[in-house]
Image (cartoon, rainbow, N blue to C red):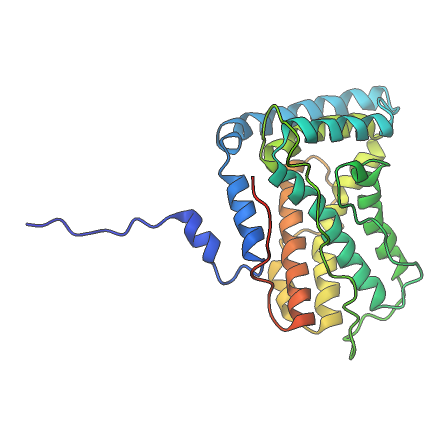
Length: 283
């Protein structure tokens, strides 16, 4: 009796061609390649709990010593040095790309409401531009935009302003020699440690809580565009849920994916189709 042939599909191949994923195929491949790194398989399971334990200990001690342990400038320099020497260029590019993506999203909201503040200008295209407190500014922008649109009528717009949804070329310093090439999730685990040291307790709590507004922004986009698609990507985070004792690197990664999905859909609304084939460099 002959043995029946069974299919042995690749999980990664299925993810890469999933038609429900609105992202550019080149970006999807970059994300998949990053997820398949050895550091993601072997180091991340160790780095994840280690990071949470260290950050929890830092938070406990900071309740007794509530001052800034590290200047923000030092944190910026340390993180840039770390990204240049220990994180893969693909992961670096995805990280820088997120800053641009989120700025594009909040600016879309500002341009299509009666907001009281000018558009956000944080659009880094290189590692060096992540200095000057870019990480802190990135989180603060979320709060500034939400406060700025308070009282402005949120309703479907007949003529939407889709200006500046582009992603400029990003310099991830691919030619620089690296000691390690960590994936982005493992990299975030280690970056969260100096981040928690440099920020005050209130600043750290504010930064973590900013990601709980993802669902709020998706709802705002759904209303402005009169498109329920944005609501499909809500993850059930409530802005009234006050809890900073969370898995921050995991939350950041999910936040970045949600922003990518929302941005890709805006690009589709602007151009009539999802971006699918963009030339891009890989490790």
